[in-house]
Image (cartoon, rainbow, N blue to C red; front, side):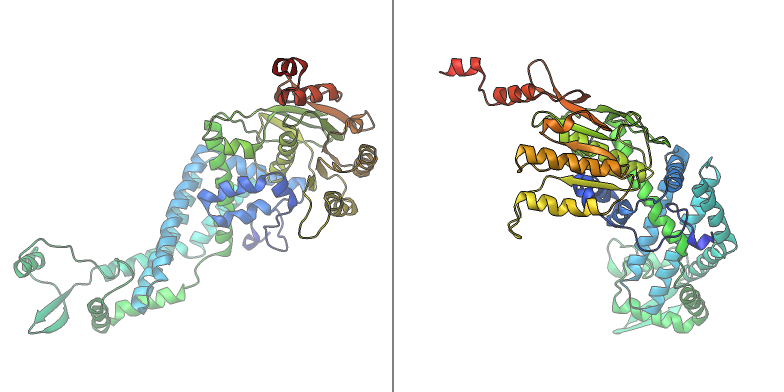
Length: 502
């Protein structure tokens, strides 16, 4: 691959732009996590969280890059780079606010210098790091080539020399008999200028500011000074403008792409570090080739992010799809953690696909080419459709897509249908996806769906001895009695409670 096409996210160039957010982002509360990530790193990174790899090799490629990004020495170099590039962005903002050609050229050269220094310092920093990923090693080699053979180090030195010559220019402003004149040179004697100002003003001095280094807006006197200096020293101003406009489009596309993509990795790592400091586990998932799927201490990252500055306790769960198992059917009491568990499975698959660490102590799962979700919906006032029709409308494209090997999450489907009808339709939906080689989870109150079948495993949300939700999910047959007892107790309708009240 030519280095112009190099990417830290892709092994091969792809058509189209990143940022294809589908319904599962909202169903899995991933939109909340992404919003939290963009809060500190800007909206520019958002599109990359909608950019999923298309092959297991690309997942492994990203995982290796992220492994390098997590190294303390690499972190130091990258954080310094981001800080340096922020300086270049400030210069660009200043340049955009000025109108005088000479002033615009000065701010542009400062921007170029900041840009080049940022990459030079990054190159030096990475040279001291032990890079193990193909992505980071290739980028470092490309960066060295651009700085040396591309002439960027020489450009920075030339721009700095020109600005130094400009900085050394001295001129005298003379105000006499309502007339102001500007001449090149400086007043004789050490501190003569400052002494003259004290004598004239009779008070404390405000340090004179170089109009090329102050705020973009300049007054008429400063503008006149620049025009006079341009006439008196045309060589410096001509060289400065020539260099600035020759390199007006100085950014290298591959470096611009790197700047955006590395911020994607850094944004997630920042959140991961913050969460780990609060006691949350993260793991690099292992990709399995035998359709094995298991995770230890898995949790809902969206809930965890929301709990970072509260006392809310997050419950972790384990899961294992044993050989031949394809679908979990999860039953249990209301508010027992069923939907949260289903979301955590979807998040596990998503962050694995993204090549990032997952919210769990450990994880091993296959590469899923897609994620499809169907969460309970309300009746639509706008369309006039009932809840069942809304559910079927959304379910239809999922089933028509015929995507093999997809990870499927279904939450509370057919709740308005008669129990017998819901059972028949639910079984047909599951069978459709099982026949396509899909894996997934079906959250439901219909106990009959959890009956043992080829590839179907029954899970249930557990209650403790006092019939209170534990938010733990375990293998086991549906327990309608426990669910009923839970509801009766919740609404104070047990025999003892009724007896006491009556």
